[in-house]
Amino acid sequence: VTLEEFCLHLSQDVLEHPVAAEVELSLDEAGLDSFDRMMILVYFESELHIEVPLDLWESCTTIGDLYHHYQLRT
Amino acid sequence: VTLNDPVNGSLHTGRFVSLQPIAVDDYPFLLRLFTDPEGQSTGRLGGVGLNPETLGSFLWSGVLTQFLVVRPDARQRIGLVAAYNAEFRHGRVSLAIWTAPPFRGRGWPMEATLLMLRILFDQFPFRKVYFESIQPAVETFGSALNRFLTVEGVLKEYMFVDGRYVDQTIASIRREDALPILEKLLP
Image (cartoon, rainbow over all chains, first blue to last red; front, side, top):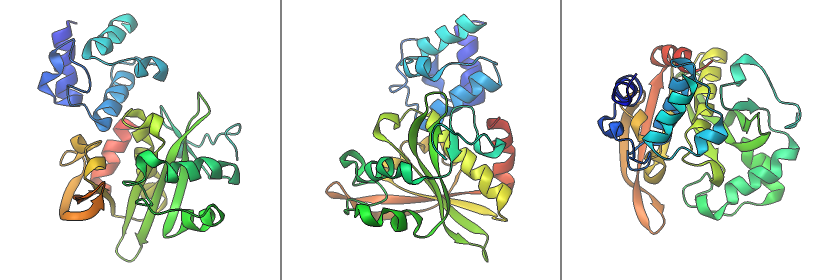
């Protein structure tokens, strides 16, 4: 799965946020609000079966960080 | 019930947070939650002071049910989620959540809102749950508006906050729309 595919999937199924495909884009700059962030976590666990500890999640500031977790767990 | 004795009921437990009954031990946290200067203007008090001696009656005024939001793995108090202004004749109730400053904007505490929705539709015959929020707070869950929540109205320049009048948004979700979403999002 490429980053583009991942983000495309993420954006289609969860975020519907086209700018999310930029790795260095911060979650704040991507315009992800609290609801988006919760949906990402739910998506990671329920769809990708990846459990991201909340402590690690707190350290995620960019889309790339999210993808890094995705790569580590798959 | 204390943080050392969490509730593990399936309705009250999510992936990230749990809801547990309020105990007197929680009052200091709740007092700080409602009198925190950072959230004073937009919070439940709207900047008005709170007498610690009347915290209990304040907490339950107009409230149908409410729970402390906790993070079980870290045994942390996160906030409070409440259902209020219940109208059983008309089948509607309002829902609100308040989170402590360190947890605002994090995302995962919002799972408490989903848990409360599940409880309200599972335990009561409500047909609609309403959310009323003023402008700064609406922006924290704006992506849910017109996606999961229906915006029913915007009261223009309705509340005086931080030196200016801001809009209040009234949104709702119907039982038949909520149940499939909750089934998908909650464990």
